[in-house]
Image: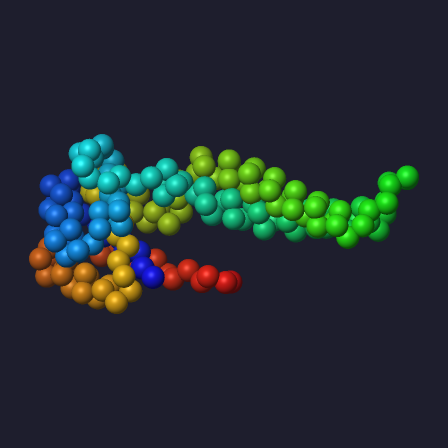
Length: 169
C-alpha cells in the first residue's frame, strides 16, 4: 500500500535533482510524476491525462447516480407498466446496470474537461513557474522520505498527503 505525497519545487533544475535523489532512495520512477506550466524534459515523468483531469472522480460519481436513477426507473416501470408489457426483477437490475453504464460514461466525458480538483491548491504556484512533484511511497517510508527531502532541500515545500482510500466504502 502506498501514500501519495505532494511537494512544490521551485523550478525544473530542482525537480531534476529531486528525481535523482528519489531514485537513489529506491523510489521507482513509475511512482513519480511532475507537473509544470511549461513542458518538462522528456526523461522526467509528466502527469497523465487521468491525473490532470477529474475523469475518474466524475465517472465514479456518474456510475453511482446512474445506477440509482436506473434502479428508480426500473422500479417505476415495474409498478406502473406500459400497456402490454410485463417486467420482472431482472429487468429492474438491467435498467439499473444500463443507468450505471450510461451515467459513468456521460459523467466521465464531462469530467474529462475539468481540471483535477485535488490539484487545485497547487494551480497558482504552478502558473508562477514552480513544479509539482507527486510521489507514491510505501506507507512505512512516508516519514523517511519527508525527512530526507526537508533535510536536503529546505526550499521545497510539502504540499500535503492524500488521505488513504478505503477499499470498501
